[in-house]
Length: 260
Image 1 (cartoon, rainbow, N blue to C red):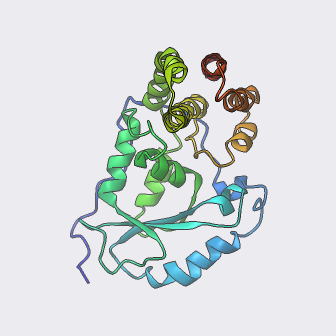
Image 2: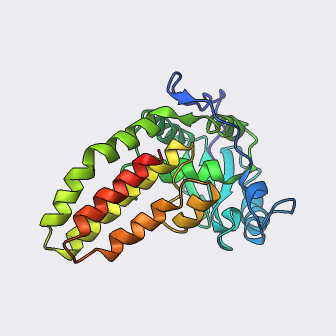
């Protein structure tokens, strides 16, 4: 086992002057309609007692958190994420959790603070930090998790600005691309990427990290982001394969921007 660090790691923080204050987020457990005033969901309890219990004495572990449908109220599953005070993820780290280092977590945090790392559905920064913001801490002997949790209560203005500007700038470009596309695969990719960026902008304007496409309409309703947006998206998919698709996209983009 590697020895613990000889000095405390640097605190986790967004770059100063690049955030706007928001109301402190309520913990995802309390916010979930299934868990309000109740104990943690069974999936999270299992991770805590069956998986994390074996790691709690490892001084290399900075903090650990759980996230997933069981906490958001849209399912029963949860994932454990362990963040390590090591140069690399330990080779003996359990396969029942996701792992990253404190340094990598910081890089992802900083990327969103610069308005980067959100552009595609697979963008790691948005996925990791968004899940952390909406999850719940299970271990935090280093107190780094608590520091990071305090920081993500302030949403990065650079992300809100960059995503909205991107949606506005590419609205007509994507409409033209959809009009000219003869390949269904290319059309689907254009729509999937464009919709992702649009929803990132919509959520960011209200101070939320877009949690991904599953249950997006339910999240829009939960956060009061505008019921007309999912309706406009439905119209886009209904127009696929017709000459009306470019105009449906323009309408969708405008609807998103009107709600940002």
